[in-house]
Image (cartoon, rainbow, N blue to C red):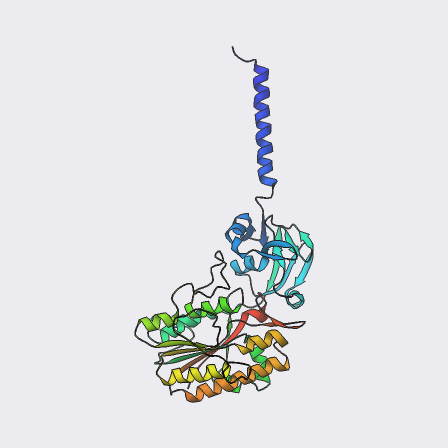
Length: 372
């Protein structure tokens, strides 16, 4: 028997209403959201990108989310001077200085922005940035391979060489170097030439940048293994040793990246740092014919964290490392190319120093290329 027309119409109307309710629930349940950076729709922070970067999740002040800095780095919006949203402007230097560790500005899984107990739902975030240098830690590995005739690309080093020494000074930010230079603390480093203003990768921490320096590969944000010691691919040490050249990484007892040909030294004379032993080991490797010697000095980072980059102790640590640099330079054969670089910069905080943010202070590093 056919149903009356009115009940059929009612059922159709009911079905439409239920469908609208279901769609409305799906749209407004928080599973789909977005906001732009500097009003640019091509730089949209949304639920899809959030899912892609879920391994970057952090918890600060009882709130779990992804630091806004990861989204800014993803879109190339850095180094950061300030961030404005919801009618307020946050000075990034002031935010970093007042933070115990990382800047606790998080994007929650619902798209809301959380900072120090306040929550804001926004459609746009305005970000003021500083100059972004073209040179970076990612140029070091391919430049060295090019100089040693093993591929790579001409970048930081112009011309070929039989031997290269890479002196990696931890936490030697560009501004910290300029401060030390003005005080006559880095005469040996500066004797090699003017520094190139370069930029590191984010997060601006040691393991992350040591891996990038060793491989020339940018960090995988979706993987989120920034503090892992395992490189993402073959290192310059691997490539050179596999192709019949000699390459070695010289470090203290805890190198920031796992490399097969690593020489580790401890503080055998008990002076509080293994850096003097590291310098002596690097000189020995150079004298025994290594085509590439990478030497990592760590105390400049350790002292910076404890006392601050511009403290008497922080400046003293750079002066000490400069003396080791001078000792190494005097031991090298003529024609050896020397590259001095760092993994990241640093900034002062209330009780010492820190790094890891998108601040210019943390992101800018000096790269000095010269020869003896």
